[in-house]
Length: 318
Image 1 (cartoon, rainbow, N blue to C red):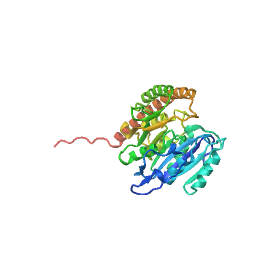
Image 2: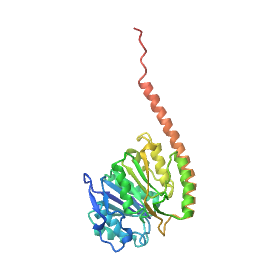
Image 3: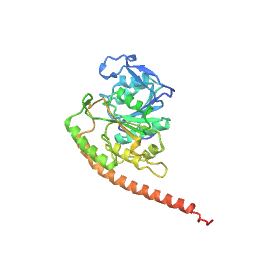
Image 4: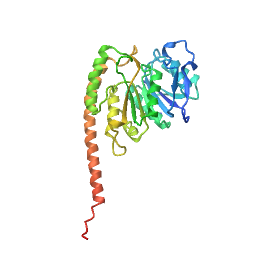
């Protein structure tokens, strides 16, 4: 078990049932109707899926019933990792485990490692448990549980290796975000898109899912540089690839506009942290440039070695 402290990680794994099935949101009775999925029926056509929720001191924001709905109605398995919370979060996690002891597991880090490391460790844990699809989302459920399920459903009809939620404030969509955060986010997203050389609209939305591939395992092999811009770093590593795992291409990514997203009070991401993430982005750009050069050099050396091993045969006159 990895040592560390600070964030709680929830890794949710769908039971590996073949085929598709339907579940009704009404199957879970709640006195708080605000969290209930807006759609009466959710289809789960993709099996063996894990979701990671990083949390830190979330006792006032972590909602038990939606998480248990994910277990009971959607048949997910939860792995809760307490990353050193100093409030009542550990007790709340134990409450969730007690409600579903066969599907909820709790582990704890000894010191705070930050959101990036909590996500990395959580995704690695999900992969070791055999997840075919793994993702992460914000523990305050700013992306509602039915929106997470809708993103996962796209894997049933799309060959993408990465599916990302995107907060696009279009007419008819319920995206609640302050103007300041929106415009600061647009500046950051534009810089991130240029850094990645990828036509991505929203790198920082906390709802992303990945197929379990060698490229993903390689991208998670070492800690991230940035606590808040790690999403860009992760996507960059997937795009660069390496000797042991090929790089993903733009066609391997799918960005899906969310129908509902709400900025929750108490978010750890302050404007100062957003500015720090901008500074981290410059360092990430330098790292990715070095990795791209190394990848090109390695590819060139492999090509040269192949030519040496397989010289062309001289043509013979007839």
